[in-house]
Image (cartoon, rainbow, N blue to C red; front, top):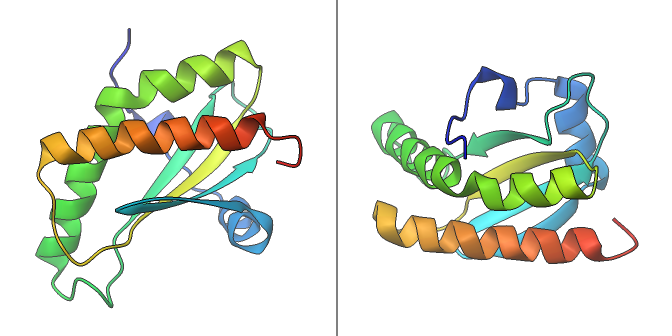
Length: 130
């Protein structure tokens, strides 16, 4: 199992991100809201992801950075669940992850919530309309 979440997992394409907001599917799992869209990447990455903490909710950059750091760590430790499913089904997705609550959770709770989110994403990807 590879627990790295390197540069090649980062979603940088502005057109792909805009496409996520225009016609992506929303999956909600407290404290996250995930926008997902099945896409085809040039490289063989199963997913690419963007993490977001809204400035309206967390005014200070220190808070936003801490939340994104904790979210990335929880995602990194549990990404194999999603990565394995996508490789088995030969799919690639773009993923925009928004931290959508006022309270800050510690890393243990965030890991549990991330696992739940991955289960919901997999369930959503199994539906025929995504």
